[in-house]
Image (cartoon, rainbow, N blue to C red; front, side, top):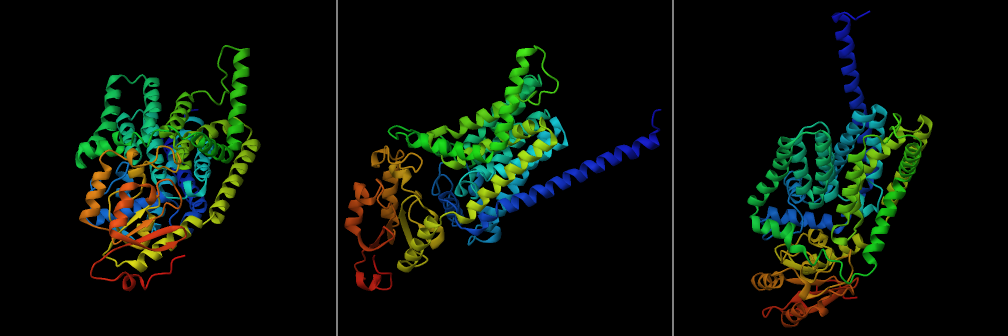
Length: 515
């Protein structure tokens, strides 16, 4: 018997209310899980050089610096400006505001992943995808997952791009692609699965135009805002040597295996379920030409392409830093939810519990990880403060720009690491390192900076690496003419500028003794 309108309306309203309540519960659970899994991020500052670089950039911008001119990096502008905004509101003495922003970013990404899965496979799959997203987001070395850096803020944009495309909101999908690109260049890889969804929808050329416009317009606006030539140079064309793996040997390969291995370990229950689902599908395809209605992997082509595109993006430049592999987390979480959806409730619960256990292990690792580099950076910063005044500029010749932020001293150069001037990279090691491998025009600019605003103190923080001051002729000669060595702390050498009006003994007498 048909329901009367009076009966139908309350039923529809009740369902809508229950849907809202379910989303609210899911968001609450995701928020709690994210806070718990990211607790280590609040227990240590900074987690890696990227955080130190961003914090130093934010201070430079606050002091009147210009991005891609007097403040430079090989990254798009979104995350540096996010740090700048957080410091403007909450002060620049702590990273807790950006750590909170990172929690929000993970929750948003997880909620969007949950919405993707629930829209295709139901509420249970949605909860699984969201929870797996949170657990996998800490499934690498702690310094790669707990830091509030580029990938963390890029991932929600990539999930949003798929979310909009699935709903045929093509302009929104394009804008989300742009958000991903402006967070980190490799975020643009999500455009490929977006185009796959566009093709599956048979949306036609008007949709292509909307996606293209949405993806291109914000990037063009950013380029115009920061000068198109400089913008293009710093985020694309100026990194040729840095992106080359020539002469690096097996080190990039070993780093890649380590990153993939750790993430696979974190997602092992999901990977096992996926392998099982793929094998079952292949076995079924051999017995019948008709797709099985109960096949959990039906309609997942875009997700596999998303995963493949994300893996391809993680390999760009052959650096293979662990945090690059965070880009695999969203498609892996959704595909894992699909695989678990095909299991019995008991088996799926066991797999999810195992994933939670592995996430707890990674969180525990975060609390117990070595603090050697952080402690060294703090000792270096203390020594820099003892030799200089707040107004003095310093040059930290190394790969750890967090020393500028920790010491509260302004950098003497726009080049915050020696990598710009020597092509050294921790991901590639000491292949193709030296002055001749620097970015085009970097050394003349660097020498002008040293003449115009001589640093009061230069710190060689290379600690035996091939880019050390004594192996860089131009800088070695500059030190010999204008500086004297006053201390060695933890293997880092400190050089104080000669002043005709002040004796070296009186200027260095209050500093720590060399050791």
